[in-house]
Image 1 (cartoon, rainbow, N blue to C red):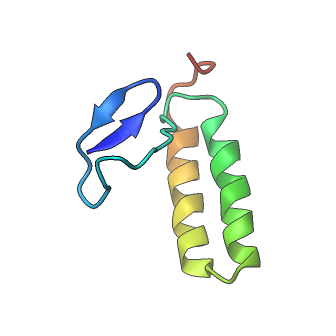
Image 2: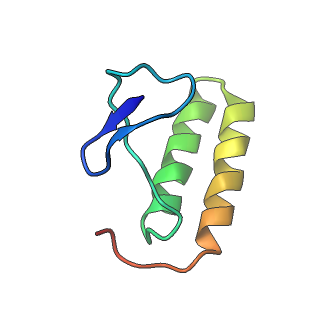
Length: 70
């Protein structure tokens, strides 16, 4: 179980019940850019494989229908 400000408690394997999470949805117009910035920071600290995975997710999200965050 995890806690999101908008969606409330979510049951996500491997995340503690009291852990705060932040969700970026594929329909969010701003999500891919945010993920690309995160990937750049991962590269800076040497987490290149994780950065590559983030960029893959960002590319997939960019293909989905877009709308401003709600």
